[in-house]
Length: 316
Image 1 (cartoon, rainbow, N blue to C red):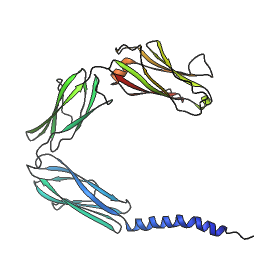
Image 2: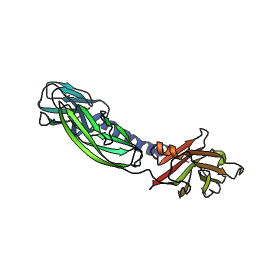
Image 3: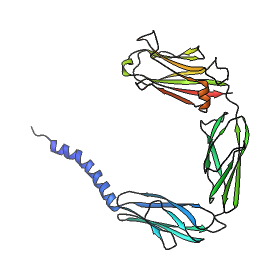
Image 4: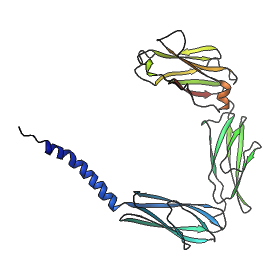
């Protein structure tokens, strides 16, 4: 009996070969497209330090960048930094070549006293996405053309770091001022930051547990305690199929008084394989939650396959 095995094999190979050939020929030809050029200027007067970035699409093989900075100098770096010794208006041209594909784009770079005056701007975010006191606030500096900075946080503290972090210890509304400075000229920008009083309520939203494979098939649950008092127990898994397992709680800690002290928030992991004691107990003091700026996720790991992650919420 004759078979068509060679033809079947050929039918399997041909599509793969066609794709390979298309990719190979495409790489040989190349593909380049420049969408734009971005510059970032430091300093408000000469010498100007300028960082250049290209928004471009291309492959990486046999790639060649050429930057013409408009002052009779050039670079083949992909993201060059160039120093202009004199003020003026410069035509900056980027050319990218990849095999037989080529694209070029130019911009006008204005380096004059008017166009490079110091400009102040910033935004901020809290360490834990909330502004409870104490709050660790991270500042992002978006100023332009400045050589130095002076931050006035509104609580008496200052900083000269470009993008600092700052801890607001107490509740209040603070006016944060950023001074962007260059050659004695100062640009000012301010924002108000409202820091809330420490949260008086802690809620455990859900708890996720990891255990070794020896507990697959067993019933597993979590008991929640605070300040030595039993709060609530989770439902049982009823023959655990795999880990991790997530237990919903959505439970306010009834015994938490709003005071952050040495009282323990404790999680006990239990199994029906042995009801005499927990598989593992993890705990954290409420004052540690406050000193870590009220984390929404707390994690524990004993290094032996027993892990727990709890999602918390805070309220007034």
